[in-house]
Image 1 (cartoon, rainbow, N blue to C red):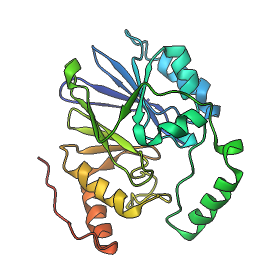
Image 2 (tube, rainbow, N blue to C red):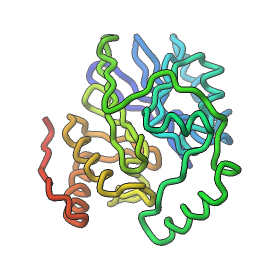
Image 3 (cartoon, rainbow, N blue to C red):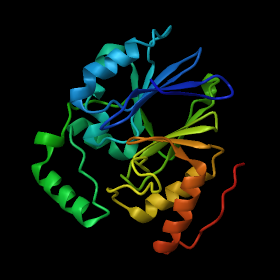
Length: 246
């Protein structure tokens, strides 16, 4: 099981990989699960979590967004772990109805897939409805609990996409970018491409060097900077700046 460690002792375990990634942030104070994957992976997800022999239960489940491949096991995990669900307020109504509209395609083939998927709807791409406990607007800070974990809005892939900043070193970014291709992080699906690139800039303003996506492998700061500059120019986003590590 792949893991990352920050200078202050937070350990991030990748507890699910393949079609979708899930991560568990662990410290001596708290355990936080990020995303739950597809329904078919539920047993594997729980097995991987159990294998960590955590000293404390999972207290929070953060959803980077509510597309089915990131949240189909949310209801089950909440029932099993008795944890609070944290997500964007912009997608709360989707959670309670059990279906989130699939994002627009960014390429011709993904545009076709998106249209077909939305016609099929909840029958194939839905999930068991759940009620979130904490709704995030632009930011949510765990610092009152003496933790250096922060949630920021990184909309674009979906209107309610959020990212989790751990110790200002590692960001868990959902589908704001993908780690499937060697030299590109541009996802095949996004509701608002311009907003997504702006969110890349927000992530560059953090001190993070590692970005953990919902699909694929970790992404370096250098690759994110290169892609941000490239797509800012392509999409005529004029507020292009270079964001060196703070």
